Amino acid sequence: MLPIPVTICTIAVFAIMLTGLSLAVSFRRRDLNLAIGDGDDRILRRRIRTHGNFIENAPLCALVVLALESLLATSGMVALVAGLLIGARILHVLGTFQRMRKHLVAPAMIIQHLTLLITAVWLLIQTFGNVLVSLSL
Image (cartoon, rainbow, N blue to C red):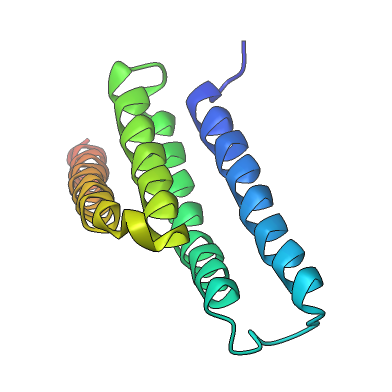
């Protein structure tokens, strides 16, 4: 069995998503015969922004899942957090990639930010709790 299966699965899903987003940008650049910039093309600009937002957020999501899994091992809570973060990233991609689905962006960001915040606070509490127990021994 893998030592951190939820983290590995999360990273694999994110790698597939990032590859798809990168290819979408590359194919649009090819169609427009553009090597750099967005050529003032609305579609390419949206694809670049979708890709950029994913790059900005997915690594932290994966690291939070890793930290949580390091502490909880095979708890269902790890899978729940990973599922929420993956779902939020998928919703965000769908919402930013096509203008007609922009209503998905706000729920995606709320899900992601709340999940990250709650998990981060829990991780801090666990860390400080362990430090205090170590100091009292």
